Image (cartoon, rainbow over the protein chains, first blue to last red):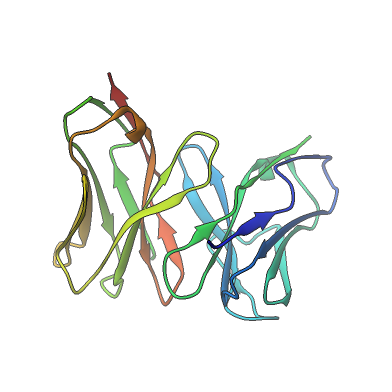
Length: 110
Length: 111
């Protein structure tokens, strides 16, 4: 059973802080993704990665960056958190098709 | 651009009746169409998917149909039960493995 683990379930950060969201998968998947989920907007892709040290922008990359130093770990970085980044963040991994999602991190920026 | 539209945004169905959720996509090159179910407070989970070389796929009470010409696909749930209450997301791939999701449908089954 594929496991995708996000390090925090709930997070509260202050405006301007640098925030790290961590995601680890245990099935040797090449592809990893970061989405944010907002009511009425569905899941929107922030960044994704097809391989170690490789990253590509998704639909809403502004204000975010990512890091993939190891195949199993994909980190999302909020360089300077703002209140409009308050959201649910979902990580996913996939070998070919069919994502497996993590449990999500609900981030509140105050 | 890459776009997936999903309707309706909310749907209430009497227990035992059928529910249908529809999605349209913008890229004729898309060839993979999964559906995810997200129960309250839980992660989205894949419930069924279809590839462009088939027009319909069934798994017990759930079926998905695809019309490539019209660029739309639908989720059908028959004999609905209370545990079907959830938010459902459709998605389509745009280039390789990247998925673009619809905005979701909140399905409520009325006992």
